[in-house]
Image 1 (cartoon, rainbow, N blue to C red):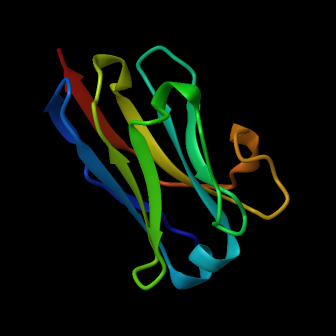
Image 2: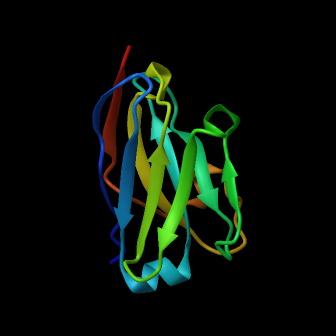
Length: 124
């Protein structure tokens, strides 16, 4: 059974930073490409960032470029999302997700495994 376990959410003031973590098994880490989505209240779940299948490239939604950074630690089978210069509009539940090879990095339907989500709240 594939498990993705997020952590690191919380409450932060605008301009602050948070780092989210997504831990999984070694098999999942090597078999899927990882990404992050978010869902704000009353809105659709949206793509934030994802690795390419090889892990050598990262694709960001325009609204977070220059502020968010995705990274990975193969020894820990963990993917991170460093979020800087946070804005109130970044407030959402953030989800880690995994997709198989050959699928679109930004399409929600590509992702076959999801974490439980972690709340990020940015106050103004």
